[in-house]
Length: 318
Image 1 (cartoon, rainbow, N blue to C red):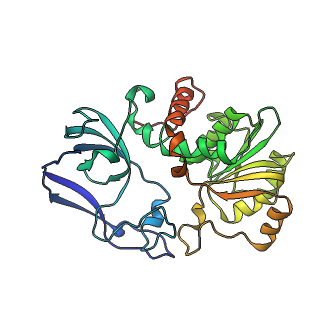
Image 2: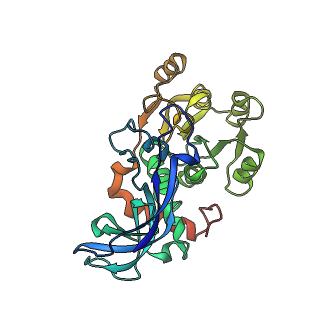
Image 3: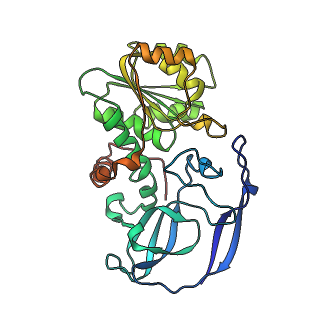
């Protein structure tokens, strides 16, 4: 079979921004013979995510994400339809997903690497299985459940950085659904701020590119910060942590501002901020959603229920 695929053409280096030339699209003729236990699938949707920047390096800096190989097809979250199956769990026409889906138009995969998905859970929007009803949604939900320590009725304030992104936009809504009385987002444009407050139910939003972030946070979080869903790290996170209350909690989801730099993960805090963290007993533990696979099924059902009830609003998508 003739397929188109995307391969890693070159590495940007640990310090540096990726460019289009780091990738190459090629057309190849692959065998279409499938063995017992395998399925042939046609790709419908692929997910492009921030963590993939680490996979462009020869060493990802983590023990759970393997690097992409030069001149080899890249992979990530994907959704597709089964065209031929020699696996007992799948038949032609099934919709399936995988966290390690090769970026090519058709692919032969081991059935054990795939999960069947039910289009009814997303009202037919299959791409949602790569977003709100998929890994970003699970990361937000399980991260808040496991690391947020939210107690309904206790008037907790949550701050979310990268709040208009895939995880951030969901985390703020889930924070409210789990019992936070106040949710404040941080993002980079006035349009995003308006989207957070008018569409997603955030109580307030800070444009970090306009005005003083610390002053705006003090205004919007008069009782301090109890839960911080951290997607970005860097200066913004240092500012938020400085306003966190005693015995509060950081959900360490991502550190986008640091991904083009050669620093360890999670990046160390500046000494003054680290002193605040320790003095106020603020938890800041690495969070990896793949460690909670036993919660995925119930999490997907919960996210789907909120979505169908109109309690979880999503970016427009096919």
